[in-house]
Image (cartoon, rainbow, N blue to C red; front, side, top):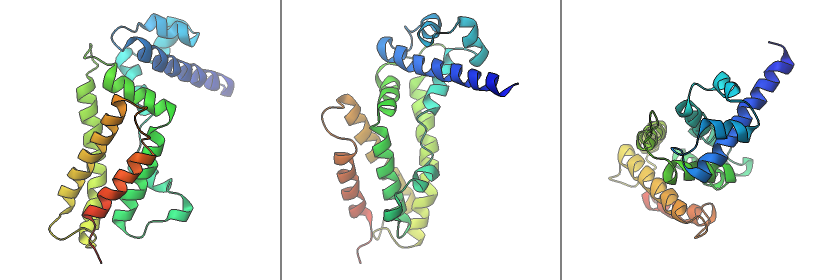
Length: 205
């Protein structure tokens, strides 16, 4: 495929994903038609099917836009804040995640998943959130286990329990913020709350 054609195909795919975000956010996933998404993207319905099999595949591709692999978050930790220890690495990566989640795209897509998506055909928002949570949980578990092995956790707290507490805290924080995104700053207030949480679980010198 010529380079120009590949670039045009990628631009069309991105336009469809942009349109899906807009239409899903405005109408909800079940009520959004593929015809309207294609029209909003400025392409034909045939062009849609060139890139996506159905609405469910489009929806999953849209979710991938806000996927936050933990190792990428670790790599994004500011150079002046290099972690000293495993627990510090988790904390700093979490702060990076909160900052990104407050960006418009992350806010919009997470809002669609939580508030604008019903169980519809092959789209099950509860199952998708459960899948995302399981992946995230498994990714950070090893890091909390390393923190336990390095004796960074407070006495009596094991890595698996710390990991479960961490995800319950983050999910609750993000969910409460999505109930009213103007109520508080996820990055500023959320960061302060997470910093306090980490201070409660770390071993004191």
